[in-house]
Image 1 (cartoon, rainbow, N blue to C red):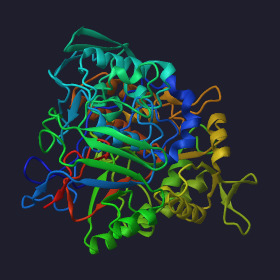
Image 2 (cartoon, helix red, strand yellow):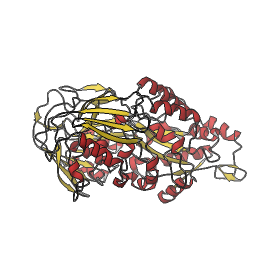
Image 3 (cartoon, rainbow, N blue to C red):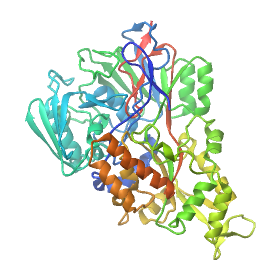
Image 4 (cartoon, rainbow, N blue to C red):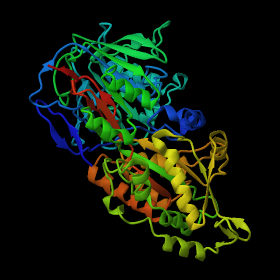
Length: 577
């Protein structure tokens, strides 16, 4: 994978490497939110039935066309960006929407910063120290940082932010997962704070680089204040106007002077104003760009990319790390509790053909449960399965399934071989077309893939009456595998779980324990590599493609970047002279 990022004064190609994000300790308290989050999943890039663990993270920053050495940076001016979704709330500690994270990155700062090489660098914190057992994290804060209301950003503000997120009354849908097994935060003094956990939680280091754990001014939570509509942060922009279902307008903060070293410049943002305009329809967003009514747009239909480039627009991209778009096979229900049935599904499909047909090959194929941009990605799983119809036929023959009648669907004891898929993605990224082609290929193998509509699918997840589920999940840490495959995250008591494959595998659980308890990158990579190989070998999942965020902008705009969650950033954006 190739992603570009503009370092200071020049552009160079970098490989997106990420580090440390989620753990399996902080999810049980969010299981009850699964069904409601599923119903909102189409409004967030982090598609999945449980947005509890983490999100997060393609650490790729990309120049938006022309940000080359010869460009003249014009300070001032405005930029209008068209988004396909609107924020439900501007409080990142409450919302799980990706657009909230994108807007929030301009309003709030984070304790730490993740560099392109995956290392963790200073942010609001100038230094940090982690206990040997990864249960305590000490941070020393930068002096002189203030919120836009003039109040100091100190240890008390950090504690207030984290304690509020952890409070069940807040109703945090996502950030609370980043806090994992949170015990509490202690103010040592004005510039020193300690965050503690009830058990090892190494992914917290990467978690605090995410916008969802951005520090908010305590004054935002005072009586009569609403952080969803009028949050106060320390970031390079301040909120000028929020019009629900229409737009969010941000103004430059002139006194901003504490950007992380990883940013491409210091001091205030170049632009005076940035507007996030809500335009749900793909064709309308593209039309607005072509008519110069907006400056940039996100979520480009893949088949439009070539024509936009030909017309002179700049197109940048960022492959999402974490869990790619995957169909998870329920290993607890017959016949897919038999590994031969699951392997038959793997062997029957031609993923490359599907991606070429639907996306013209612009989305990379996924081979395992992690995307290539995720730290600890196991490359050895590539090329090990798929497009082997003869092998699929033999496996199904061995299971006793034979074809009968005109339908072509195999049967055993008069019962057809069906695979009922809980399908929530709809037409997002044309996933409905992907599934339609999967149906055709599986039918050729004698397997009847049936789609459960959203309402029925949600009920099936809770009752464990589904055969497969599907989603993608942005995360910068390989411990997203805990969310997906830990036995602790199998649904129970009528509530669906994030382990949609219903995997209860002692080998996987043992390696997950190694990964969550260590901050040693090599040790973690070895553990998570073993899990990836195990998932592919046991066919617990059918990986499809790596979601990729495409952004198009006018050739008059430069300096647009992507952040840790493939979130668009305009701090370094400018109009060219």
